Length: 85
Image (cartoon, rainbow, N blue to C red):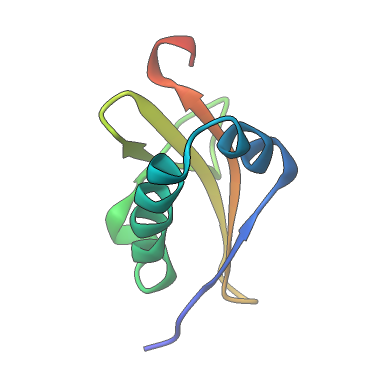
């Protein structure tokens, strides 16, 4: 099994900094699953976001990510409130 490297892009990192350490730790635990099986834990999005995946976090947030299969990297693109996306 090949592990994927997790990279958090600036928009997602800025969102995460707004929240307390407890939320940040739960977020880290949630995305850690993506390092092993990013296609199993998330759901692929359809047009116009084809190529991106989503993973729910805390029942009210969506983690939007992309998978670079050839380089084994998962990019956390954004984190959005589910009602705003």
